[in-house]
Length: 237
Image 1 (cartoon, helix red, strand yellow):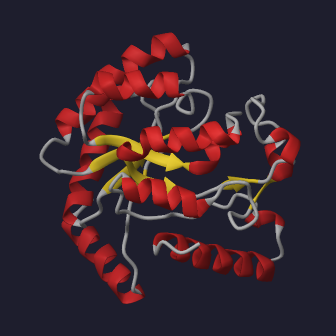
Image 2 (image 1 turned 180 degrees about the horizontal axis):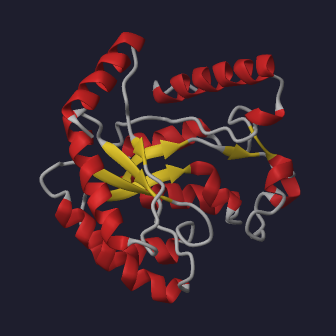
């Protein structure tokens, strides 16, 4: 968050031939709201200097009930938007856990904050993990795609008999999660939905099953995932 630090990170990224597409924050808004607002402002200022368009944030209650947490989250995120107004940087709430995977929470949250800079880190697998049937998952992508400012491309391969059921949250995730190449989610369709909504940032791989694979197989899997998303990005099937 210093000029020297920003210069060094940008130089390192350039030397590696890489572009930073988003920052990732692990927030504790309920526990320390004032500190989190100030921290978001510092990160947003650094993001502006580094031409990073989005910051992934957590909006997750620890002790509050969902009905209690909604007005608290709206009030706190309004402060974040006010504190970062001049940066132009967008904040992407990840659909994550038991609260922000619920569209009936996300919709009033976005409406209540009322800022175009508050968006979504669209985690494709998390809506499915939450228990939504696969057909509804695509409907949710379409609903929230205009809010997307960052992505986590993740998939699950459920038995065919379970894909269109409303499952319990997290049902057998450890058994069925895996590569985006072999999962149930059609990433060509995901990319098309995002493209139609005007999305122009990353397609970021989040494969939580790599730790179960031997190193060589993990690398091969990642290479295949990269190639798949390149094809999807370019509009090929």
